[in-house]
Amino acid sequence: MKRSVQHDGSTIVKDTIQQVKDSQVSQNLLMVMIFIGAVAVGWFGYRALFLASPPNVAVNETFQSDDLRVTLRIDELLVGDRSIEVQLNDSSGRAVDADAVRLRVSMVEMNMGNTLIEAERIGKGRYQLRGPLFTMGGNWTVEIMVERANQPTATVSKTFFVTLP
Image (cartoon, rainbow, N blue to C red; front, side, top):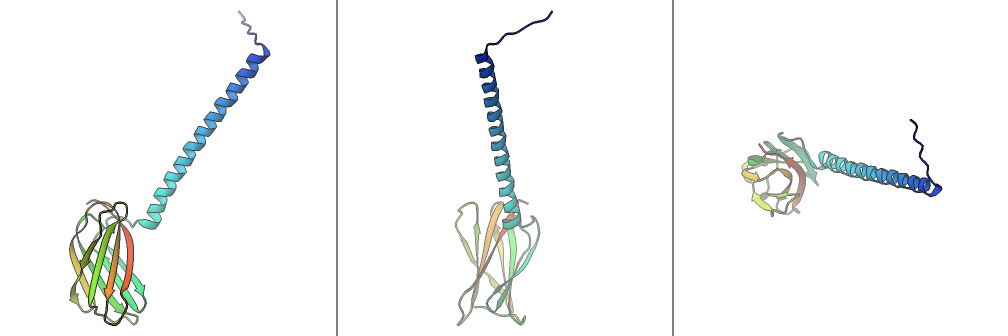
């Protein structure tokens, strides 16, 4: 048995217009989904490449500030009690003492205030502090300020990604 369907011209035009609209809506929805995915990949990629450090690793980085080399050592990038050491050397590598070495620790994503801590001198050009510096996971900036007689304050900073233990 054969069925025959008859359409007048306006029905065919209406059906065609509806199919085109449905197709455009699907294409627009697909474009929005692709855009959201690209933004998410870009955001997390940016954070991984430029803000974060590999988790659960020790830090041993050296920064130059005029004639002063400042080496920062952090035992692990984990929440909880941490041990941080700062080593100061001049441009020829000799240890340099400072009047004060202070660290400011602040979380990037959340305003938790700034924690300013004075490091204890443990040797020629070596300073240390211990304690609960990172209170939650996320990106943290560690700023080191070195005060020396008759010198401007030397300041270096770096952002690290801290994880839960």
